[in-house]
Image (cartoon, rainbow, N blue to C red; front, top):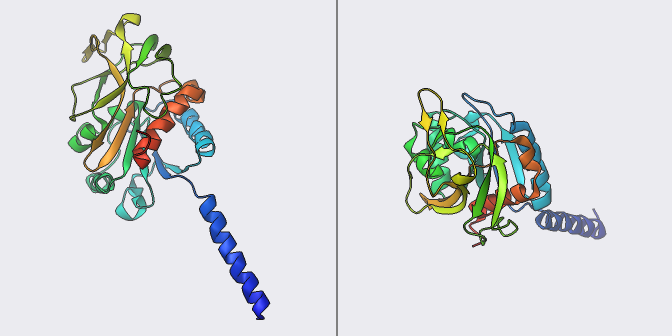
Length: 254
């Protein structure tokens, strides 16, 4: 090979590497939607929204429902795990330990809607999420208050606005220092629910629906919004989800 050809190959290689760096995604997401119980109809629409957000906000993601991929070797490629509309027991003990080590390494978690209706018998996970779901009334419109407008993704939201969703009632805090982002005013909807074995009367004057915190070396963001599939096409809701993902994956934005 002549010196000219060698030089051309070297320059091509350098250009290829440089181009790859320029177009590298901000972070890599494991999107997990496995259910063991109720299967939300919104899963397909929500995953479609993630495809849109990945292009708009320039992140990579892998979507699956395979718990066997929760192992140390596979998880090391990700910056963030998202539990999207998961329910019930979705990981075995070995897989749970891998996820714990993932967070302990300084990485992030995002839980959306029924992620709080997941893994009740795994204390570490309930602390990671922050609170566990108890019950919800019928789908209704309620008034949301933005509590921390400087958190990523909330800067575009009005201070107060009406939203239609499945308003989760939560149990007591499972972790210290939860920082609340959104609340819903129970005076604007009917919070009572009766499922026979479980009854709900609401949470009173302060009913949180989104929060974040640092936990066990990593970061966690949770939002209870997201029961209705069409909501995932709302630009404000997408900004809310991405803001939580951005902070949880990178620790930036505050």
